[in-house]
Image 1: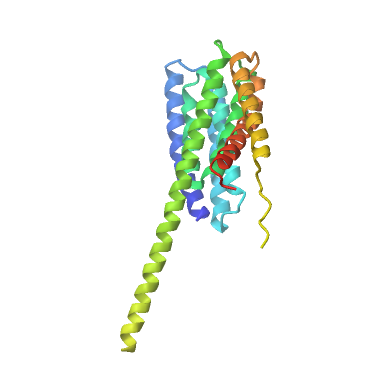
Image 2: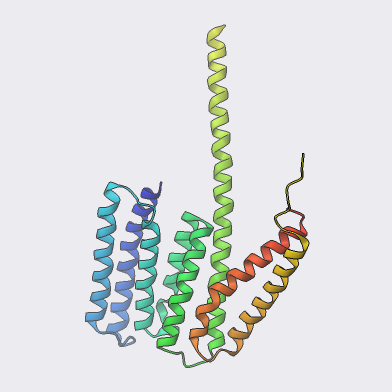
Length: 188
Length: 65
């Protein structure tokens, strides 16, 4: 199951990377971003190498630690992108939500909390290294909003997982009853 | 048969509730008055503390234990 999920994340990661690279390239050519090509290419290359490494690991199976590692590296790369493209004013801030929602829905409340903690730490470090021009309270509210969305997404995932388990048990019961009915008919 | 010892007593949940309120006040205070973003690094601890305290209090109010 986890192997399947991580494989789909690899595909999504390629798509998101391509979209983000195109967006950075477009904004750079219009002189709206002050990032060197070397930095952009280095970030993209890091992501590509990591994604290839994950693909190689996933050929043999999905170790338990892999989902935590892939999520952590995704958040680290997004944090680097956010830091390089304007810190709190970065247009790529929304990318954090892609990681949050995709992982929370797939893995549940535990992963939602893990993503929220890593985001909180990473974003606080970004703000410390490159403080925003305005009030810090706005940034605190942004962090709270992220936590709120993380908890809500985790809660929805929990409910979904519970309903899936109930549905699975119904299907098993129906299959068992069908089998019993068939064997009863045969015995007559 | 002996009744099992309650995990969460009224006293413990009361203490947890007060601690949760204190953590929440600290959280709001930091968000409001912080002069350095380094303070935001304690948010996960405070938020998880508030959530645990709120959950314990809610469970006790609902007589879950």
